[in-house]
Image 1: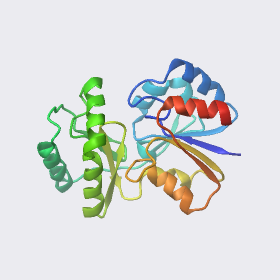
Image 2 (image 1 turned 90 degrees about the vertical axis):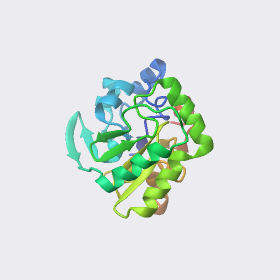
Image 3 (image 1 turned 60 degrees about the vertical axis):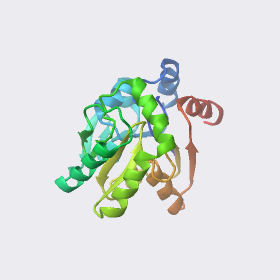
Image 4 (image 1 turned 120 degrees about the vertical axis):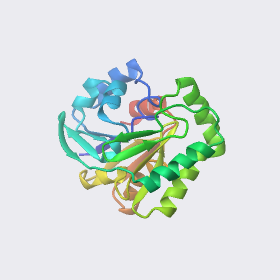
Length: 233
């Protein structure tokens, strides 16, 4: 049987927002009798808030925190532990202080199961500021540069860009690609961050390296995902 893997932010929902109600209805029916896996950098509560309890409960498996917490049939079956040390925290504090983005909010570090989510702007920003930072970052590549520094200078951890305003930091190797340890056979993967440095990239890269039968759909938004599902699957 074919395995379908979906990122959430930017793929099934707008970043950190709720799924479109019509798409939710469609997707709830579409997942029936299919092997469907969700993999996201977010925690369980945020995911349920975005896609709804019905979808979250009825997919084959949900990989939260980039696969560092795993839920199957609404039961927790695995989780990894990870915390950043003072050296890494001090480095990231420096990035907050020196960031050329001037509008700062609280909650720059969010501890999740198996990873730390970091943003220079702060997760308590408004949606308007989130959108503005995202456009600014596309041009200035702040998050990409932070990830490059971490991945080059810290051998035990890695970082990737996710969502609109943040990066995910976790133990090296504990990225989204780890879900393929559990999922065997053909894979069709939908994600919006498959470029180098994006948090969907490790999963896409591993599929290619393993020469496993697969199909990658790098989407721009949830509406593109919806259209592909209606036309092809």
